[in-house]
Image (cartoon, rainbow over all chains, first blue to last red; front, side, top):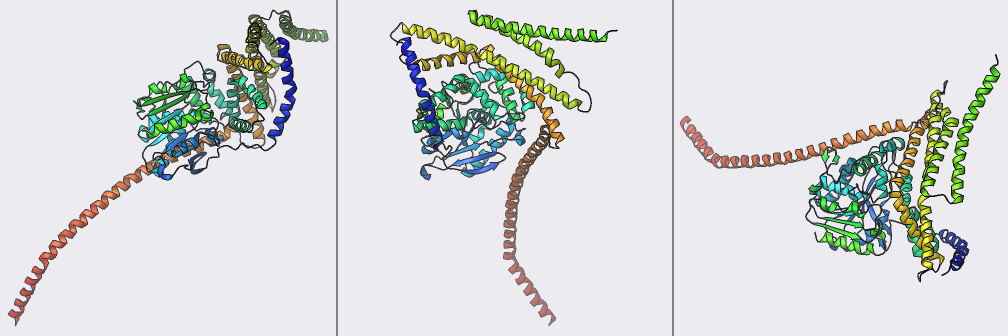
Length: 353
Length: 270
């Protein structure tokens, strides 16, 4: 098509733009449904801001797998992405496969949580949750599943308490931080984290959000333009609004754990080198002997394959399965194709062990 | 003695010096404008002009504003004023860093536009020419995405982001004492005071949890010992029953011998 033709096409698009904006306004003010985390669950244990959720089973009680699964989400954003909407819920898929699913909700840290560090989150809160589940389910070992930063926590826990873990599953989990294909990791290497904690206390969720959005500035702008294009599709609008809710629901991060995360993991890369010390104990990944399922997104820009894959070779386990999915960071859980295929694979893998 | 003329000359000299800084800064602005209009705006050239502009602006700011913000204050509000000035200065530096970042952030935009224009021209000559503006837009998004991704990971991009964040953190660090002064004047606990309280609560919780764990451990040991004691008691009572049982078997024989001894005694008496 000629240059003139392109300009006419552009003119046509610009003429339609005000109509699309008006239509978007109508749709947004018409009480759209964007409820998230709708899968029924009970809060079975609470300590400080931490809540342990137990999801209601979706299969006959006799068909429920005997070994429970504990999901540990990251401290960044909320776990609701795992339970985005009916028909696009990673947690519901796991429940449909007959797994007994628990999840740690870290809540919204305040100033009172300023001094919580890795030791508190991993050796206390996670350990307490695992002990509680073990006593309820009358089992000494459970399946531990970690997502993103929660996966890193799960890896550290499994290395420190190997006897308590039956199987370890890591999803989009960074463990090798000395890489050059993740913008956030490169920026973090230059941050003065002590200055940040001194000035800010806890890391405000809004600041973390700004940095995440800055990683993909073009996609951030483009998605709103695509929203105008898809505004007539109710399903698209519903999913979009739920994703927006999740993206901008960012709790603060406790100051001390932020300091340790940046300094010890991102800047000094102590974890993969087996040099991380927690409460006087060295975290040795070689002590992880339980089966490991390591899932990552091949197009993940937040936790790229180069940061997730090395875990498979670092653990002492002989039963390691590594799966790369053709998707991005959250696509594993909400991508239209991948979430339907990944959950059954995970369930099958767990049940086989 | 003509103090008035001397004073006037000194003031004029100060004004001229500051004026010089302003002129130097405006020169670089004109250079940038000229480079843009005449098409001499190569990346290297623009970067050099931008660096000069930043240096001259910083000089001008320091001479006209900055040095007054760092001058010592006097009187009762001395400390408060000093902290306020330091915070203002840090804020100006942060805004300067944001400005620098935004200028650098436009670098991939220019490169992307050049690539897009070339791609449109190239495709016009082939059968794969763009049919609609939407196609051009989607193609442009891919180019921009890649260029921005490359720049944000490049040393220049990383340095820009880190510099901006560092200046922001410095500003927040300098703002805290100002907030503390204001809060103290209202008798509201400051952030530092609350952090002391939180630290105390955290340490107390940690001690309590350790003690809870020790108590649970002790309870487990006591339980085990109790079980052993119970087992021991059961064992003792079992053996004492056995002794009683064997004693009761031999006891009737003794009774018989006693009663016969008694009968014999009675017989003897009578």
